Structure formats: structure tokens, C-alpha cells
Amino acid sequence: VCSVMWGPGGGMGAPQQRTYARGPRVAGPVPGVVRREDTGADRKLPSRARVESFSNPRVEVVVRKRPRSRQELEAQAYDVLECTGTTCSVLEPKVKVDLTRFVDRHVFTFDACFDEHISNQGLYQSCVQPLVQAAVSGGKCTCFAYGQTGSGKTYTMMGPPVREGDDPAHRVPGVFMLAARDLFELLDQPAYSHLEVMISFYEIYCGKLYDLLNERQPLQARENAKQQVVIAGLQEVPLENCHQLMGIVDYGLRARSTGSTGANADSSRSHAILAICLHDVETGALHGKFSFIDLAGSERGADVTDSAKETRIEGAEVNKSLLALKECIRALDQQQDHTPFRGSKLTQVLKDSLVGPDCRTVMIANISPSDIAVEHSLNTLRYAYRVKELRRAPRSGAPAAVAPPEGARGGSSDEG
Image (tube, rainbow, N blue to C red; front, side, top):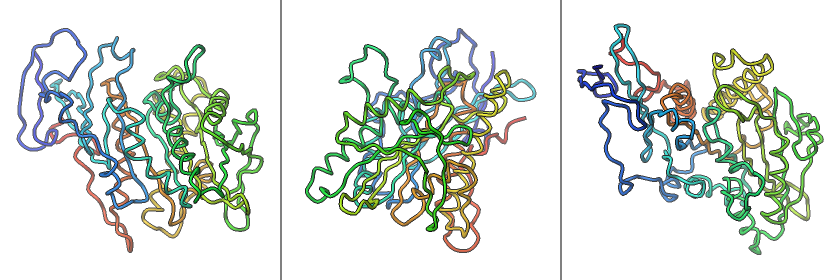
């Protein structure tokens, strides 16, 4: 018999105690924690109207929880995450120094939180679709997915991988494909008949740029006299319809750098950037831009100790660029005098998509539900919350300190 202790706020206040008899390990909630039965009738899924009521912030942060994988079901892993409305709760099993078991409850609040029942279509309609109209109207929009390797980032952005014998008609579209469909519908209107669509697809691998549509030819990112970043040698392909876009993206994904890690046998080892540019037919000037970014999976150095030296270097470069991205978003939202775009190639090439009054960004934090990956999920949520809380800082003077949400820093007052 082991005891589970927690109080209001994950250990804060007067602790309560419940006991349970250890039985066979089964899939489901963590034993000893009372969870309400989810019938689906009262599940709060953010609607597009509610998401649009955020006063159109420059940065929106949403969380998506993926279903448990086949490997997690075979291992009978527990589901320790609960996403409802704008709240994401994590139940982290812990052991005190006196071997007393308890559960530390972490609560995070974001613009929207989606559980495992949400589809790519529902996610797109709730938080990404408003950006399509903004891009057609002359804005520069960015949508990127962040999370642990194997948490569903590529599935969210690009859809499932293409396999031989798959029927394209029944393929689950990614967020970028859904956005492209709405984009072409808008361009069919007479008001936008003067615009043409160009697409480019490239990756950032170990701090270097490679063109995925031109046999991974190396690229160079340079700044011109107007302080605009230009990628020399990048190939842009004109687009006529969504069917053509699907073929181009599949071609680029086959050339993308992937590898095997301890957490995922087919992990993306590079940042993939799909840029859809709208140009004026008469002048050739850039009218609007929509960038979709599938970030490489974040991981800890301890998880790659058994891998080759190349894999450890890849992980270090990935973490370095992700840190630089957070610092750039932080500087932009606090309107600091200096923004460290040159901290990494990722932030350098995204400079034109993040700077300006017409820029909009949506960050999708993908998390894994099992207790096996609870530390990775907490790291992802803390990173995403750090990006989100930046919007609360005052616009002038020194930024005020913002108290983190309950459990954002981890730990509990009852922990021995």
C-alpha cells in the first residue's frame, strides 16, 4: 500500500492523504487521483469566435495534446495530461526522500488548449484560419509547432507521412494544406486577381540552410542595404492549385534530414520552413507572406548520451536555435531596442516575418500524454508559457516580474 499526498494547488496548503492498493499496471489515469468522467458533452473546445476575441495579439500560444501511441498503449503508460478550454493540467508522479509517493499537479493557462480528440481541421479553424485573411491583406504571418520529438509536430503541420498504396483522397491534411485551400479560394475573388502564389521549402540543419526543392543545395542568408534578410539561391516555385502544392511538399519532405533518437525512431533533425509568398503580378513586389515552420524536436542532453557524436551536435544546435527564438519573441513583445535575430539561422531567416505592425504569430505547443514523457511535456509547457507571459509585461520602462502559474517552475512545497 502506498500513499498519494497532495493539497489544493499541487501540495500547497494543508495536505490530504489517500491510500490505494497497488495492483496490475493498467492504462488510464494515475491511481489515487480522482478525475471526473469525460463524456464529451461538457468538453470545452475553443471556438474560432472566442479565439478571435483575444484582441488580435501579435503572438498566440495554443497547446495540443496527442493521443497515446501504440508503444505507449503496449507499455500501459498512464495519461497524465488534461486539456480543457484554456487550461492544461499535468499530474507528475514523484517520490519524496522518505520514499513517500505523491502527485504534483501543475496548471498552465494558454490562449487555447486542445485534447487528443481535436483534429487538424478543428485546430486550424480555431487558431490558424484568421491568419490567412491577414496574409492576403498584406500581412506577414507565421505558424510554428514546438515540442518534444515524437509529440506530433510534423503531423500537425504537414500531415501524416506518405506511404506507398495510400489513397491521396483520404489523406489527413496538415495545417499548411488547409491554409492553402482557403488561400486559393480567396485569390479567386476579383479583388485579389492581381496576386500570384510562390512557394519555397528549405531546412535549417546544424546551423546551415539547404533547399529541399533543389536537391538540398546549400543556401546563404544575407542582409541587404535595407536590413532585409535575403536567402541567396533559394528556389521559388509558382503555384496554381492545392494539388500541385501537395506534390511539392511531399518531394521536399523526402529530402528532409531525419534520424533515430531514443524517443523517436523517425525524428526530424532539422527545422523545416515552408514559405507561401504572395507577389503582385504587375510590379513583382511582395504583397503578403505566410510561413509554416516544423521545428526539430527539443530534447535534453541526457537523452542522447548513447547516440553518436553527430546526434549530440544536432541536439545542441536545435536547442540553441530554440532558445534564440524565444529570446527574439521576448524582445519583440517587450519592444526592446535590440532584438537578437543573429543568435541563430532560424531567427535570422524569420526576421521579416516577426518584425512589423502587420506580423502575426501562432505557436502550437505539442505535448505527449504519457507519464513516460512527463518531464518533456513540462519543459514544453514552461517554454510555451514563457512565450505567452511576455505579453503581460508593460510596454514602457523595465518589465515587471510576472508570477508563474501554479506548477510552472515545478516542485511542491510538500516535497521532502
